[in-house]
Length: 508
Ligand SMILES: Nc1ncnc2c1ncn2[C@@H]1O[C@H](COP(=O)(O)OP(=O)(O)OP(=O)(O)O)[C@@H](O)[C@H]1O
Ligand SMILES: [Mg+2]
Image (cartoon, rainbow, N blue to C red):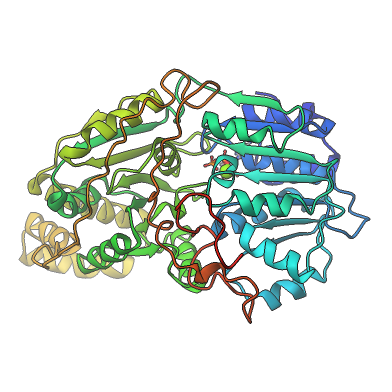
């Protein structure tokens, strides 16, 4: 790995990078930053959690002229949370360069964004729906944009977004630089990029596997009705620092979230039908470690970078291999280790094999843990806590009382009682009924067998009803020109029109 000093960056940038604690450039950064600084179009592909944000963020900032108060770069991301996160990272990277950065996304009051735009930001990070809204209102003008970035490019060029992206790109001068980044790049999307890029440099940090090697990957075969109890046992045994549980639909996420709370876990749900406030609260609590579990649809599958996520549980097997790669990539980031467990019902067994084939990585089978193991897990957590408190010290106020009580009682009994008290009560008598989800049907198509995420043929073969945040939405969310302009109120920018095959929706 190279140091950032070797990449030809400005002193302000090097300073900001070292203040962020980055010592060496990651491989994707090392390869793409010099190319991007020269002005090349780039398709950058590297595993989850390997620093793609800075790989595009650094050159974008370096190419901005801070003395010119116009929008010079546009970064697009598929979800609001990701837009916010990318804006934060780019803001930190640009903190010494005098560049102003602004995120714009649905669900936030547009008037607030319009006020913020008066500060003349240089770089906008936005979700496509809200960006289009600003373009129509002429509150954002893109005629001075020299660099455009698509983060999660394959997702952005997929069916639900591509028309919006095209409309936005027509607002940007043609002699622009385009940077497309993602951990996955299915062949047919890669082909589509030719339409938007000029002589792109393909930079693929393609390890043997598409997923990160430091994520242990397991699957567990079970019946749909066993899933919830097994999840609780896993949480007890694994005792994650932070965990994300992915469910297939919004209803699933709501029900799971309720059920986990009833069983005594600190959980919150996130999906596209929640208000932005609810989504923000859930994300903030999760980032601050006030939750143990974030329950999410695929709205949280891509790009989110929360340190401390040690475990990902696919309560429902993901619909396609890309989703699998991104979901499990929420753990094992920036060189850390992580663990992912995917629940597979008997009829989904073929689907698991397809995922394994595409990712070129086998998941290890993990046995269903017993209740006894779960209980032992909880007791172990209680013991760890007790020892932790003891090691922290500051026990003077209690020592007199401890000595006194030890005159009467046996020390083993006392410690056992303390442990019993500290062991989280199971609440396993709380009756939980989750609505069953139909198994994922594997489409038996030969897709991307040879070069799964690179060049070559292969059928996209994606169903019309992928993640729960997508299919079946009414048009309301995208109602252009609604009074407040806050058209994403009930959904995410992520929540796209139903995939009914290419036809423009009537409200467009
Ligand atoms: N050179 C570096 N040294 C140390 N940490 C870094 C470096 N570059 C990035 N990071 C940190 O690594 C983490 C992951 O980076 P980032 O979110 O950009 O990954 P990504 O490749 O975009 O992943 P995904 O495909 O999931 O979106 C972040 O917390 C980021 O701040
Ligand atoms: Mg990313």
